[in-house]
Picture 1: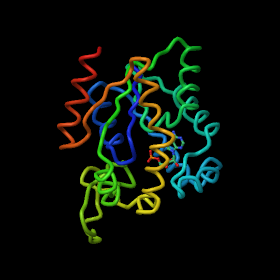
Picture 2: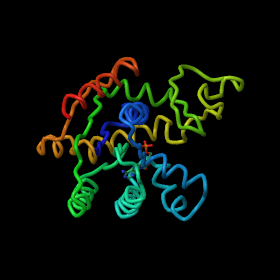
Picture 3: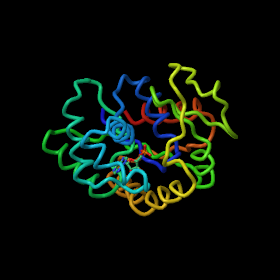
Picture 4: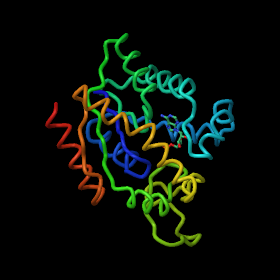
Length: 216
Ligand code: AMP
């Protein structure tokens, strides 16, 4: 089973990918997390991608596609994979279809998590993330030092440098111009599942799980 999670920044792709992966025994690959880890390591990939991420624009396709295809070929999980945050434009989507065709693989479903724009901005500006396990938290107001701890792994909570208002606006602009056309691309090939991404986390997970089961 190969599934893509599609949606704007702040739609909840990462949170839901983790939950749905647990439910079906899948591996979740989040391109944003992979890039952030490379930036933290300050390795060659990290040095190449840092500036794009800080500006909130897409990392060039050659770098991204190569990284994702490499990661996919290294995965041995038999149940399958959730791709969170990839593809993010038509060139990446076509490169993925092309690579899968050669290996007789298929993208089974594309889960499009739909959230209204004002809610996306609210969620991103109040988002804190665990540095260790990437679990996101929604917090209104500021956090005192003693509360900056992940309830799941005790890791340190931080605000992503690209979760500031100016960069958030840029990322949303990039999403609507470059990524949103993928909704039609996957709808046309009958792979799209549209899910309402507003409400409680568990409720949304149930919607996605039910929609995927319905399709299988
Ligand atoms: P995310 O964690 O998914 O919000 O991604 C954070 C940043 O990583 C984005 O703003 C881009 O700079 C970069 N990024 C993540 N996924 C991709 C992708 N598929 N193509 C290009 N850039 C990406």
